[in-house]
Amino acid sequence: MASVNYRTLAADILEGVGGEDNLVGATHCATRLRLTLRDDAKADTSAVEKLPGVITVMKAGGQYQVVIGNDVPTVFAELGKISRFGNEDSTEEAAPAQGNLFNRFIQMVSAIFSPILWPLAGAGLFKAFLALAGNLGWLSPSNQTFVILSAAADALFYFLPLFLAITAAKRFKANQFTAMAIAGALVYPSIVALNTAGAPVQFAGIPLVIMSYTSSVIPIIVAVWLQGYLERFLLKFLPSAIRNFMTPLLTMAIMVPLTLMTVGPVTVLLAQALSNGITAVFVFAPWLAGALLGGFWQVFVLFGLHWGLVPVMINSLATDGYSIMMGPLVPAVLAQSGAMLAVALRSHSAARREVAAPAAFSGFFAGVTEPGIYGVNLPLKKPFYFGIAGGAVGGAIVGIGGSAASAFVFPSLISLPAFAAVGNFAMLLLGTAVAIAVAFLLTFFFGPRETPDTDKDDAGVPDHADEGSTAKQANAATPGTALGSVKVLAPVTGSAVALADVPDKVFASGAMGAGLGILPEEDTVHSPVAGTVQVAMKTGHAYGIKTDDGVEVLVHIGIDTVQMKGDGFQTAVTRGQRVEAGELLATIDRAKIREAGYNDMTIVVVTNTKALTAVLPLGEGHLVHGVPALDVEL
Image (cartoon, rainbow, N blue to C red):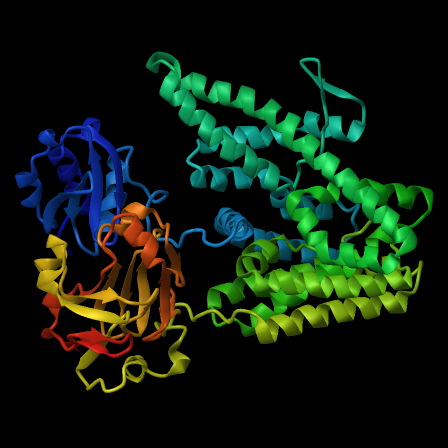
């Protein structure tokens, strides 16, 4: 489809199906646009089938399916530029949120932070350098140059809700600018002043509990999530004459007070309970209180609960001259930084290392962990858990030593002098060292290594080039492959089915390329070749892999299983990931697929068959995953 104009094709398809008014919904799978029409009779199927770039058209499962092939994501994206349907937010190429509620929460937060990771990492490094300059006497904190540079470094963190409003709005299908307005209200100077004043606050006679929303994460994510539902409700029921301006007006008027009346009070109450509990524990078991603070401080920060502890710390500094609560925060912060450092040294992903290295530096020297928490440790999970473990052990040691801060500082290596005057400073250093060591070593030896990136560097050499030449990798991954050919392995164990007998006319016709079907007997699906994952559908039902020799292989799990929206599918790979032949692609629930009324046959085809010399089926009868199923002659 190199000569096809995708914008023209998208426009012609839209016209051919009866225009935007006849379109109820649009999505896509690995090979086809899946359109839901108001009236099928308005679609000119014959005209759509004749469009350059369209393979065929079929109707199934209540959908009007336009088969495009590998370029369907591009056509879908172009459809989004000329209509309200089809855009990058609704494509199905990314891996879905999988697992339990906590895992899905982590994936959601990581996805929202992903677009701002580099600015966040840069700002964190900026703060670290400024902190060093201040401690070394190069710049005085009272110097106007320092003040201006601090504003540049701190702004992203202070106004973090505004940035998260944009990315959260994209994820939750809400208006980005309305979301920014809501976030702006949360950090508006007069709202901040209400919090610092400490006087009772009311809204329409209702008592209001105010908290600090600067640098917060969860409140704006929750607010934008609710905003999306409210906007869709208003757009549906408001008259068209007033819809455009009344929707944002009502959304802001409702969501700002609602957020302040719900998220704030809940967070404050939880934070106060947490603060009272930890304060009480310090009395009878300092080691336990130290372990709790050292282990879970970053979790408290994530949910904004730390704001309930900060006033207690400041009050202790004012009345006693020190805060014992601040002692365990040093191992808490530096343990997470140690885990980041291990990822920077151990990960095979160059992109991850580029985030982890500066994030570890800003964590160690400025106490700024946001870039590393949201860009490294939390998405990878294990480093975050290992950081909690290290912080808990180190915090217990610091608690036993009674270490405390004599000034309110960000816990970091350069702020250690603030902890030297009260308690056992040697125990603080020991606890901090142990925390870093535990988190670093656990992550280094047991953390996720990740796969090499597929992007090329400036010299045009793939990041994984040190593993051997690409030809060697392809041949090594598929034993018995002769020069000039590639063996495509069976992705599942089961009975082979000739492509012509596959119960899907698009695949059976060979329009998508040569291949075969397999009736699976197990719930695991494996990569048939070594290469790069180019398609990993959000629904988990289809994967496109391109070998180093240019062979493009599609593994399609089930017939029309895209309709299950990921239920029964658990993805093991992501787009852009390097996989070896036989590596796990997905785990499926065949019983659930059959209960939903779908065929669980797995189809493997070479989608660029026409560009190759030949694609010959090798397997018939019963196949075991990992045995050659297709012979591709280059």
